[in-house]
Amino acid sequence: MKNLNDNLVVFRCDSSLKIGTGHVMRCITFAKELALIGYEVVFLCRSYEGNLIHLLKESFTVLILENNYLENKNDNLLKGKDIYENWLGCSQAEDAENCIRLIKDNSLGFINLLVIDHYSLNELWENHIKDFLKEENDPSEVTKIFVMDDLAERNHNCDYLVDQTFLRNEKEYRPYVNSNCQLLLGTDYAILRKEFKEVREKSLKRKSDCKNKNVEKILIYLGSFYDLNIINIIFKSISNISSSKNIEVDFISQVGKEKIKFIKQRFIKNFKQLNTFNFVENIADKIYQADLCIGAAGSSSWERCTLGCPTIAIITDENQKAIGENLSIKNVAKVIDLKDNFERNFCEALERLIFDNMKRYNLHKSSFKICDGEGIRRLIEVLKQ
Image 1: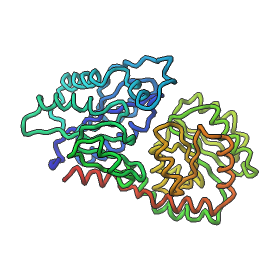
Image 2 (image 1 turned 180 degrees about the vertical axis):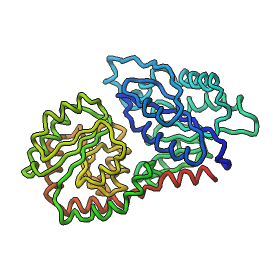
Image 3 (image 1 turned 90 degrees about the vertical axis):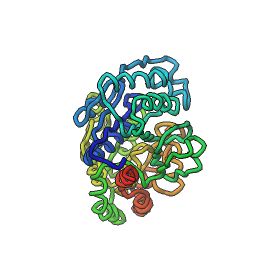
Image 4 (image 1 turned 180 degrees about the horizontal axis):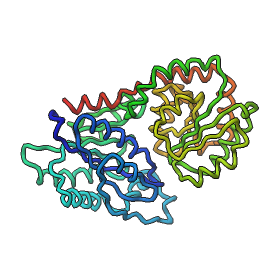
């Protein structure tokens, strides 16, 4: 990894309505920074429904794997690892072979770094790819395997593993990785776009003023999550606040323009202003402007923490529970679980945070300490060693 001027990095990640968009979005962020220092980047992705391949193609070469996924009527009965394995639509060995065929057909040559960000893939896939690369590479050339994870429950055979989960520790991962794997754990390695670091100090000043300022702007951003019943509860709860007519709401959702339009038509009369977006280029600016955020308790938590934004964090999926619990323990966000009296708990949390400036200020102070926006710089320093 010493020569950064002639390196090929291949990313294996996916996005879809089921998988969400978080894996691809953080890979895009990492890939752009790698490209800036001389890496050539190629993505290997499947074209699932709701994918972000069009977004990847704006900046990178994308080699598309066939979409083998067929909707299974029993999908909703699956839990934990079974859910993630089902997302792939084929076995890990088949997926690895598909990737190998694309690598060969496109004559990619020596791959310096292979980045995997995928809940469906573990050491079975990694071993398959490693065997292929060992045969293909010159004896002096070794492809490094870089895994992004946040589950701490699957075996991996890799050179680097990054998990940006707050309070994640080495004991949780050592049983699952090879002895020479370098573990890069915690929010010091959070993969965030450069604008978060750039806005951080300005945001500190603005959010610190919340002690003396009422809530005038709320940001609702739940990623690809869309449950109309939950969205209704969130909007109705804000509407029922006595000061709602003085509140401006930004609603960002990646679920399609028609659903966004439906939400706007339904609730626009309840607020001072309701701005809806299917996608925004600079999410950091939206978080900076917000007095209160309502968001998923996933990796977007580190974006809000970097800017110190008081937040109601909603656990929308099982894989967010560990993050949510840690955020709650350290008073970094007010955490609400969809499966635990959501409407009542959300309404109570919303009222407290809107009408109690000191509670918002305390969340701001706690969250700002969690993440400094320097994660990619630290990761690149590791790769240069």
